[in-house]
Image 1 (cartoon, rainbow, N blue to C red):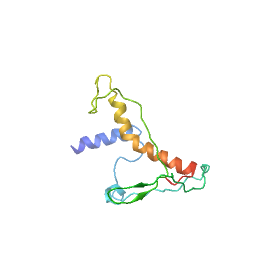
Image 2: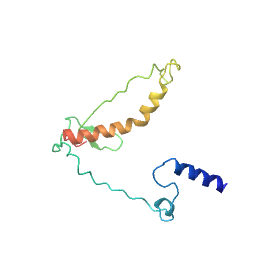
Image 3: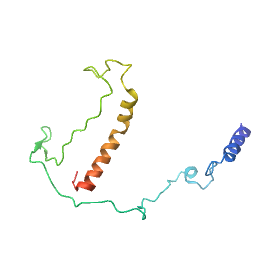
Image 4: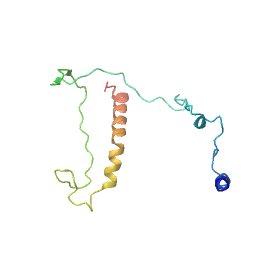
Length: 130
């Protein structure tokens, strides 16, 4: 078994794979320590435009009936995705052969990231405290 693994390691190394395929005793993955990467912003890119934040609220006040907390939303937005096909009231497709399952799954996985990016851009460009 060890000979087969050694042969595979040699083939991978000979194929031109960048980096090391074997872990040394002092590597972070083998020692259980966390690998730390720099979070510094690159210096060769221009600064993104930024407006000063303004504190705005919609005139309407909402009260939570359970806790009695008062909320004054500063932003209300409705985001709608394209249709993947007609569905019944229980959410099942009317015609499963034409329903776009792949796109529905992809949007489900990435929608939260898109909303986060939208909020980041809104804060940066519009200066809203979202």
